[in-house]
Amino acid sequence: MSKKSSADAAQTAAPPATFEEAMAELAQLVAQMEAGQLPLEASVAAYQRGSELVKYCAQQLDKVESQVKVLEGDMLKPFADNQEELA
Picture 1 (cartoon, helix red, strand yellow):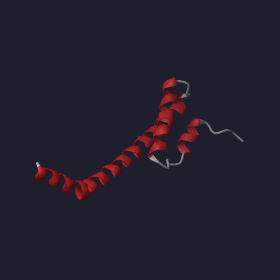
Picture 2 (cartoon, one colour):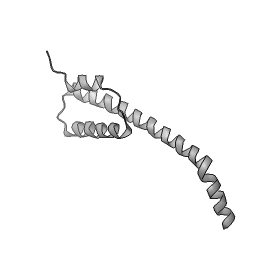
Picture 3 (cartoon, rainbow, N blue to C red):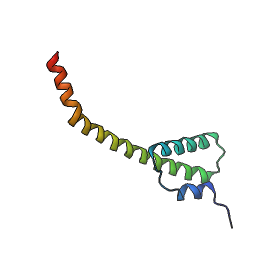
Picture 4 (tube, rainbow, N blue to C red):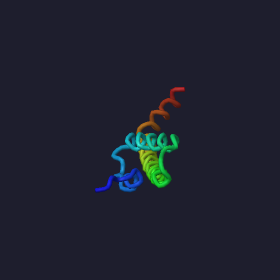
């Protein structure tokens, strides 16, 4: 049996379970790439995985932003209106 290279591992990695896991994996990939110790194929695979993680994180942030907008619309706006009336 042959060992999987880091390039193979990056291509078959499962989607992260949480935003925090994605950020931790992304930080690890960046550190490995910045160290300059990865072979070319592994560097390309790490870059590809990093791009996937960045996309995942951006999607998660968009979801949270949408949730905050809903909260602002339903809960925080009336409070702000009340504050204006008091002034």
